[in-house]
Length: 379
Ligand SMILES: NC(=O)C1=CN([C@@H]2O[C@H](COP(=O)(O)OP(=O)(O)OC[C@H]3O[C@@H](n4cnc5c(N)ncnc54)[C@H](OP(=O)(O)O)[C@@H]3O)[C@@H](O)[C@H]2O)C=CC1
Ligand SMILES: N[C@@H](CC=O)C(=O)O
Image (cartoon, rainbow, N blue to C red; front, side, top):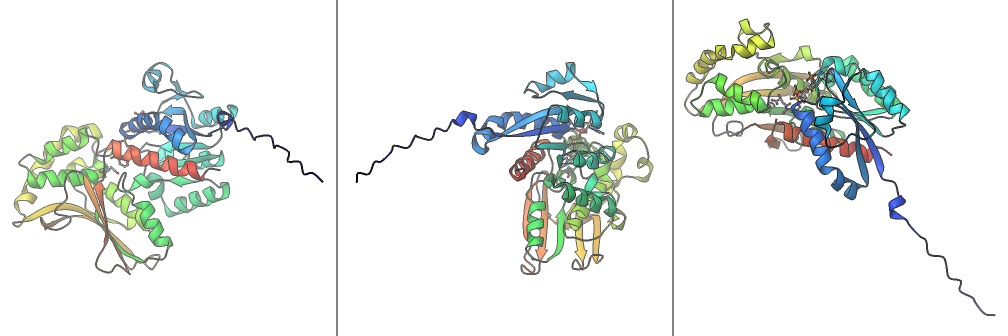
């Protein structure tokens, strides 16, 4: 009997026909962080398509009043934003995604708005995942925080916010993993604010006035849209609370003891009036600097301590302290943040995460990192 070997037809794979996973992105907030993020997305788009088989497609760019909507917004978005925008509502953006059958949806929140955060449930219920540099959702009431997680789980959607603490530094993911793997975190302490780090690092070392350093921090984009949020301690307090909640602690914002650095008479005025009167901060801070002992510098420090094994055992403090210039905190440079993470197994030798704690480029890069992480998770 002869055996005939039949030649198998060669399987033909048309690589071009294999569709890349298209991720459809709506960017809300096109200020310091938002604009840089959009530019970084366009710069990296082709490389990401090659390496990860992903097509990152932006279909909406919006600020507080107007939106640019289009199936595929181009790298020329800034010009289009001046000529083709329209007033919008969130419902219209969601409707646009539906009618154009856009799948794998991500809404990016690069605002500092509490009003915008109220739309998160609407996005999730409409099939969107979320990425946010805005810290408000994670620092609203614990009830809102928990309901949001419940809604995400019910809809099988993701919410990533690595830039909420430490800008582009890999902090939240590290803390989540340590906690999940059972490494008991006993304390987190450090300089949580990039802008206040920059301000006190410069002010302690240089001759300039406090207001001149503050103006520079505002100008380069280290501060919040309203710099009083940094100076009154709220921004650092938010970061502490976000980390506390990652550790399953049940704290509310009101539990945090915060040292406000703004003179009383400037706390309740409009942002514009505040910005016109920055020199009012010069004398109080000059006095603080003069009163320092030799070799000491000022640092604005956040401290999450107490009994972190109990839901309600944590103590959260935010205050201006003097530290030795030769200590880890005293040695900080530029806009660096520094986080000391103490755990049971590492004892008195904390894990230290340090690096740029503010700035539009590093923050946008962190948001882009979250988009890529999320894109991998979307099946
Ligand atoms: N700067 C940094 O280093 C870091 C910043 N972040 C966070 O990034 C976020 C953005 O900061 P930044 O870019 O400096 O802020 P900007 O003030 O530069 O930009 C904010 C943007 O949000 C828009 N916006 C405000 N409210 C709404 C709304 N309701 N709906 C849609 N868009 C809205 C604004 O539009 P309009 O112009 O119309 O008001 C503007 O385009 C903040 O939450 C900040 O905490 C996080 C880590 C580091
Ligand atoms: N204003 C913030 C920016 C990042 O969250 C800071 O100064 O750290």
